[in-house]
Image (cartoon, rainbow, N blue to C red; front, side, top):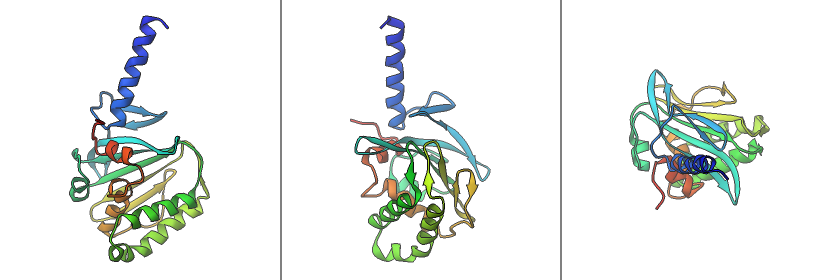
Length: 201
């Protein structure tokens, strides 16, 4: 390998590590496993910044990328939950997966990271969300869905660019969704750190 090619490879490796850790972003668009994420977006008229982004692994397999957008950066779950203003989580598949199975995993992730009474109150919304995923049959590699929290409106679920039904009104619903990735029993510990912008030791 030539010196210039070696330098390019080293730069790519370093940049990839920084992005997975949710560290400083040097470009308007970042590339994570071939998925493009903007470092800034607008939700409900408010500018949001990419707090962190990473990849969900199952064993050695890449399942999806996730990006968390907030009005300002924070490195704690409570900082995410308590922050006022719009928020966004974007998920893009890296492999084909049955949507119903994904819905079940999200339901389990919410239940595992909440008190039983709190989860019970959200069951109607959880069932509606699970049905949305079931209706889609399969999410293919490259397809995505977006979870937006909009104050005064609720949680807006958009799948493959189409909003799915009415917003989920309860503020607790969006927090419960965030706990899938940021709670005490997250779907993926490395992804939790990446979304919070916590550098690997």
